[in-house]
Length: 274
Ligand SMILES: Nc1ncnc2c1ncn2[C@@H]1O[C@H](COP(=O)(O)OP(=O)(O)O)[C@@H](O)[C@H]1O
Ligand SMILES: [Mg+2]
Image (tube, rainbow, N blue to C red):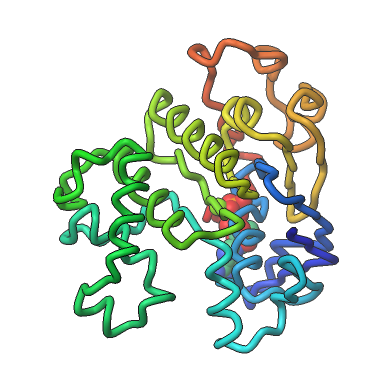
């Protein structure tokens, strides 16, 4: 459903963030994109929804070529791709419900959403989604009164209200504790299965990627250095992706509760870690 062909991104600073990326994501597949800080993970998903303009190559979402769409057509195409951010990007002074409804911005138009008037069907669907993500009791809470995990649940409900076919998820667990991280990854995983959604999840925690993705793509220095099943990821491949490190505890890890957080050694992190 999503195809990247020869995608390259060179920033104005001269950094080659992506180099000749070829990637094809079938419908319903949950793919984890792993790699050290600066590998190009954020750049890749931002090229897909064109928050970042690729320097070369083409990207197709089903039959639509995303690269080169005019802004009007792009807005339309973006509805099919919902983004979930690390920082949740909620409006603190608005309620949980209002934050979720803002996911319909692309549909209801600026003035209507500015006036906070949403069609009844949207409100009903938002309510249903908030129940599904476990926040049915917190509809009227202000976003700034929520925990990190709850904020991410709001972000997920908001993304789903857009009724997307593809989820673009950038480090969803970066600010969460290990237990909450697993809960959030499990929720994303389940929702993808329920709604037949494809997802690209940028995540640097290898254990989480292994546990919750159908497929793992490893990025290093803007190039794909691994593309395979979670079970195929071994110490040697992890060394290729992240550089020298002792991966012996990681290999074949089964017990999620002992999952260790894997952070690339600072010396190997390329670039600024955005
Ligand atoms: N807005 C930007 N301007 C210039 N260089 C950038 C910008 N964003 C990212 N980069 C560079 O592109 C490379 C990839 O960054 P990024 O996609 O953020 O990697 P990751 O998400 O894997 O940490 C890094 O070298 C980074 O410094
Ligand atoms: Mg990033």
